[in-house]
Length: 225
Image (cartoon, rainbow, N blue to C red; front, top):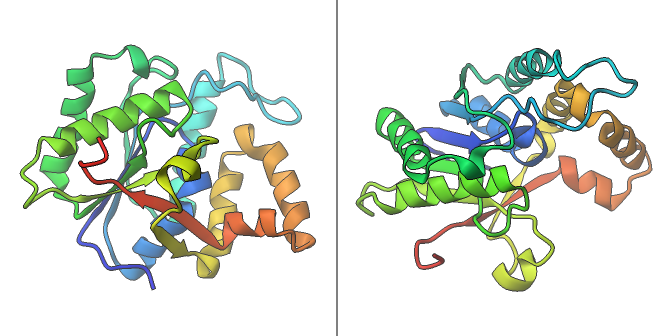
């Protein structure tokens, strides 16, 4: 059983970031009756994929990805979706204070007991890393008495070697279909992976099944920084 929270705030830079790593967790919280807010910083308008077969263009992709994000939210049962309006693949160049203030404003408004985002230094993509830095910086300035927990996704090649095994493992088998549907909602970006995933699930391949049976996080502590 997933731990009960007062309010969960999810902060990622791109549409589909939530689908792969946390959509089962988001759906589980919503089914439990926990309010969830997803702040998606960009529309992923610079995504390299244009569908398989191609159905998007560079000009149409932002509109398509916005529609996909709304559809994904619906698949999870998410009603509080915030599109924050920043530009894809530029977050590393945003003013650090502006990014930190964006996070602070969300936390002050929503007063979450849990924030979910990326782990700084282990999130690979520059937009992921910029998001992680802003979240850690904003929460780090809060009074520890009122600071929400931070569950962070980390998937760099050296993650377990340096951080150890994830300490939060959420069983999502009961929402496996919702996770698959959320991933399918982002079809402009996920078609090839879904093809491989469906094949692996059909063959009971452990590497495929792990995507739809559990989601793993690290509890970030400010001694880590």
